[in-house]
Amino acid sequence: MFDASPSPGQTRAPAPPAAQPDAVVPSPRVPPSGEGGLRSGEARETGAAKPAKQRDSFFDNAKYLAIVLVAMGHSWAPVKGDSRILEGLYDVVYTFHMPAFIIISGFFSRSFDMRPDRLKRLVTSVLVPYVVFQTAYLIFRRYVGHSGDPFDLFSPWYLTWFLCALFVWRLTSPLWKLVRNPLPIALAIAMLGSVSPVAGGGFALGRVLQFMPCFVLGLCLKPEHFVALRRPWVRIASVPVFATALVVGWWAAPRMDDNWFYRESAAQNLGAPWWTGPLMTLALFAGAVVLTACFFAWVPGRRTWFTALGCGTMYGYLLHGFVIKFATFQGWFDHPWLHGPLGEILVTTLAAATVTVLCTTPFQRVFRFAMEPKMEWAFKQDAAELARARQRRPLEKTSA
Image (cartoon, rainbow, N blue to C red; front, side, top):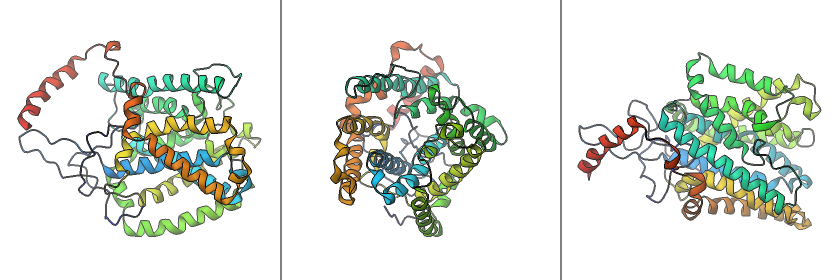
């Protein structure tokens, strides 16, 4: 995963035409020329048509690697009980893998406002997929898992919490950009969420509140912050930091409830005094920021074999849950030989391979109806957007 380029913004080739933008995390496009550091090709206006925007390989790489860690973590959950090493690794990964993805989501939500076309995109790429996949997961749980739990669209199950949370976070983006100190306010809200008895209720409220500082941090970041993480000394420093985190994870594995890392329950619901909730919120956020910074420091900035897969990370995220749950319902993780070192390595490898395949273009084409529906029939035509489209057509013809 090492890349010797000095910054994530060196010149890169655009993603292949077949690669589609991620439906949930906004496409990691090249920032305007006024933003230093994360540029690809140094596009400048010359009076002619503007060149086509290119995806930034750094962010596509980061999204793919984060989703692989998510899938690996889910595969470890059924087999980690017999391994203190795997338990510690699980806790370390759960400290930063979703925060890393959420920070990227926040960073590319900086331009979100209440413009009609952006609200439409929010509905079609977040709200509608939530309804579709929440319904699919509940049907899957009832008929494959033989569960008698109620059919409830308002209580996200398994992986769909992220879509629910992202819908709320992105709607509040304009408000966070108005206040002077958004991050301290978000942390205060998260700390309140860690002691609220309704934190584990509907709409994934606990995770919406407790992960919110990560999203707000992404909103506050600028391209130069990611450039700074690419400095050689940061990469070097990240090695002992990760090593220390693994030692702490190994020590804490038998002493700490994994539910803290899920950020979905109040402290009282975990059998702890209420005052531990705010302290754990601050500690987990600090750990997430440090480990995410170390993670970003080692993400390649150039195009790699998996860069194009960053376009389909939400496909891999939502689809791999069916594979994990099917294996769980069928009792595949119960085989004793999977609970040894070789079995754990096999499970990890299969999880990484599965989510990789699910991020590929064929799966994007098959499931685009659910992840990126156009739904033109449901919305009025926006006059401003039609005017922008008419202005683009002559430029496109000129460039052609």
